[in-house]
Image (cartoon, rainbow, N blue to C red; front, side, top):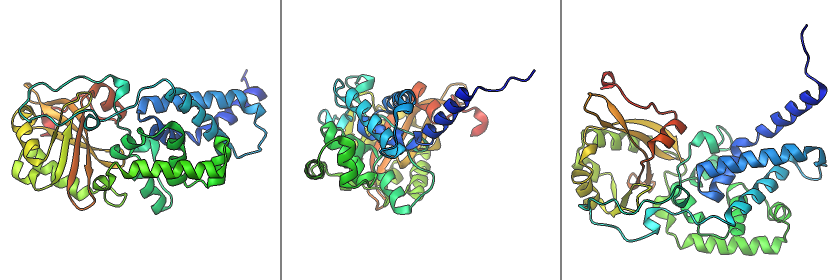
Length: 333
């Protein structure tokens, strides 16, 4: 005898289906506020759970989307009340000499800004201008700058400048006044204005695939002259979770031919991360294949120059998240 689902089960499934349609955009919102991919996933899951439990009390006085954003904001505020600020190595100390063998202190997982897959936080289609803003707002430099804002200012700026909510809608979500929202937005803009984000502006919200191709060609050939030609004068290289970072093309090259000489002969697979150029890097292994080394996110100035090389070394975490294989066999050469 075929069993049929109960009406209650069907209603529950319908609610879950409605809520799930907002998962990607809520993940993007929480990621910008929290700066961590895993934290964002946890926050969205908690948001969905709270919404599912309270759905019978949702009276439709606001849209379902607004209601979910209110819950997500409260979840993020709860987390930020006890969390330390996430940083990048460049925000912690001065650059180090390229020849240094010690990579510096190891930051705890919850102390550094993490990468995120574009598919997890960005819409696949929409207004081109809105999509460009979305990509720019998940770039590592922008997300790191957001972490310097108080939580309320952070939420106001993302809601107003990224998601294009009106001042009135934002005030309603945060249970405050329009004047308070406008004041918070002004202060947030002033803080971000001091972070010199223009040098990491990207290609007008687009990924510069041609620049990425030139970089990968130079890097896989380990042609330092070709690589230097692609670097901005103020380019930086850093490797979370270590605090080490080096500044300028000359120091970057000195690091690559010195402590980083093991990267010679690497193979790379492109991925989509943080609205930026990105790839998985595999180092050559004794068996003739290649093993994971790091998830690399490149930042650029929008004018054909790389401004940042960030290599996330926790491959056990990041490679599965980006669908990267756990090794490349010799046949891929």
